Image 1 (cartoon, rainbow, N blue to C red):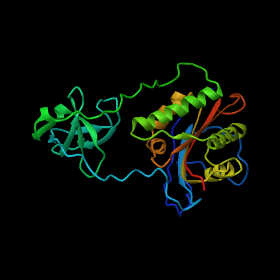
Image 2 (tube, rainbow, N blue to C red; image 1 turned 135 degrees about the vertical axis):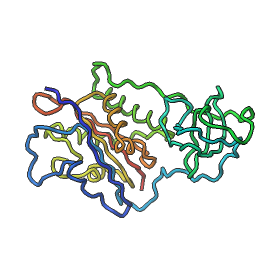
Image 3 (spheres, helix red, strand yellow; image 1 turned 45 degrees about the vertical axis):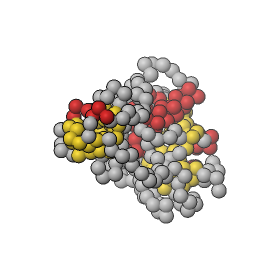
Length: 300
């Protein structure tokens, strides 16, 4: 019987001089000192992010310092609660929400002159609001200049519709989907690193071979140890795992979880590896095990 995927996960974000603590019992499976028994039930997805003091160097992917803000072309006031989005369409994710009466600088307009590019208060990044929901109280709306807008997000199906994937096809598809999510949210794509692929594949193989689902290896090694064994130097990293579905299902489950989404869209994670292993579902719980390893890799 094929088990229905369930969602669970935890996120551990610590300073470079700290070690990642064990997740609460209700969100992660602890690793006992004795070998894992064959489990009867598993969660199908979980996540962890750790910061590792491998070398006290700054992350190469720290967001750039903003030195100036474009001069406002006009000022507007939110008529109602307004969702401010990453791009000028409801296809884009929400960046922040503006409360009724919030005053915001208007920096530009979409080519159709329907969406305003605004600068929200509290130093949030510029984002797009639907024009009819903003009252322009200062400046001439007709004089607001056009602003560069990101491309409309690519439609991503909820599942593969029964399509079968080779291991390589699964890994490449999921890698592309994860980078698409980063680009659509204003981040640079992560670089594919062979050593991260290897670490991810070995962990997926470990889960498939020993029929368990967790971030700690069957022998108790953690995410940091697995990456270090591949000869990687990194300042921080994160991991998401999944089982029992296709790459589109993995993508949507991860992106639908705040914990997993925060790992995929973490600006410090500039490198990515994906590892997929198929298994005999009659012998173990799931027919496919998936690991995605993110890190900020550097050369010492």
